[in-house]
Length: 234
Image (cartoon, rainbow, N blue to C red; front, side, top):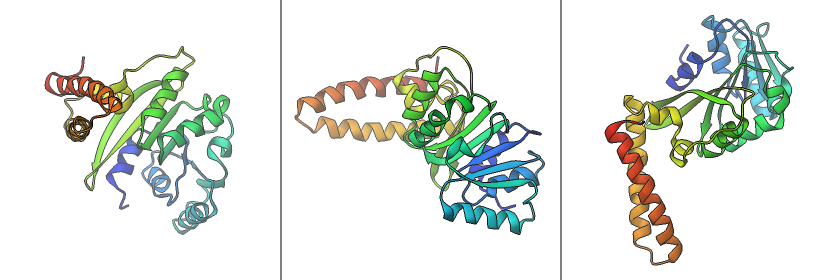
């Protein structure tokens, strides 16, 4: 199958040999990949809107996999029964949208062992919800594809107290920073540092008191990120 690097890396974090769900699958490529490669014996696709739901149905039927890939129409986790799958994949949606999907079916959300999430920026709201719930972020991976960076966040529900992440960790990810020596992480973080440098220069050009306050704040964060990139995250 001709599957993107992003989808291949998402698949690598799915618990093998167990059922999975792909919420917001659209084209159903990931679901077909999981079944074709023997990673999952069954996949449930959930789509809210008619167009993507019909596209997923058509592709699954074309591949002759309608007996092992169940395409359902519904909102978020509502298409699933409690404990019906081991891994839930939600990819390509905004970070806040993914957070809302989890919070919208929270009791049920605890019944699945792993979530493999690939949010679109900003990721801050999603990580904040995960920490408020006490869910552990067990892995994060930066994937570069066609000059774009994608963040994969792997989290597992835990009945644990809420915990706190620093502002940098909420922005870029605790595992990404802890493993800043990884080439993809280095490249991603250095690109973000350049973006912050441009922001700092823009704030320096402003005379407003609000801009001066923001400048002081971002200078501190920028120095912290530079230290991480130079010496590694501790």
